[in-house]
Image 1: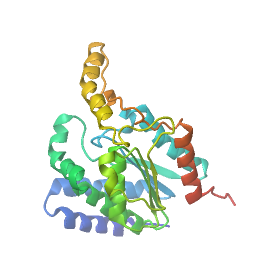
Image 2 (image 1 turned 180 degrees about the horizontal axis):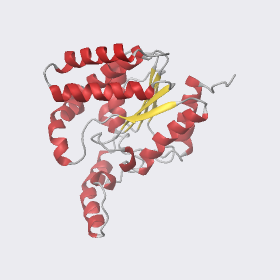
Image 3 (image 1 turned 60 degrees about the horizontal axis):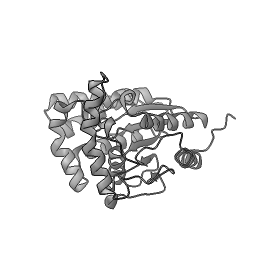
Image 4 (image 1 turned 120 degrees about the horizontal axis):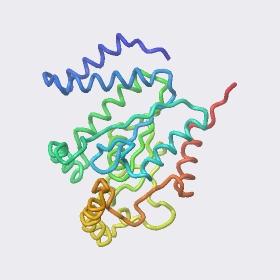
Length: 264
């Protein structure tokens, strides 16, 4: 389907004005990002969106290895099935502690109530994209906090035939609000051991979080620059693509929903 980008640009600006009014910075960021996505995804069959775990501001190259493996595994499987895809990330925060400060209120609201301005904003963007690019399918990919965020977005979207979600290791404190449909894959175990953050194993989780600063200091003294989030060693809370059960479930979900593209 050919998109009229002149009309698209006018609609993006109209939507940005509706959302942000006279806040020129947010207006510009929104329009630039949305127009860039629409241009780049033109001619593609799939838009893959990675919602990073944690605060949601980590570029893919700096994510934990197992999280990167999931994103790469989904992308490679879609291509193996014969489909074209654009992979992007959706950031809920910046990087570094200072950039997190403005997001504390929204993060706390999401933690306590499952509501977030960023959930609303992403849902609005996705509705706009699939409305203008009719044949496009969207797959959200999220682990841990990113899985909870993706689930909240899916709930906000309602019944969309073009948007799907793959969610791995959603923390137990979000599970009571989780909604799973046939367009969503929720994986709660890596198939090797129970996930402490999924099984209400609060004692184990607290031990892992309390030990992380000491592990971080140890690495720093060794001259290794590592994010403190990478020092949290939660048993079972890793979902590497190499784990057979993880790879099988995701592969089956993609093949059942999208199949192998015929070259005929």
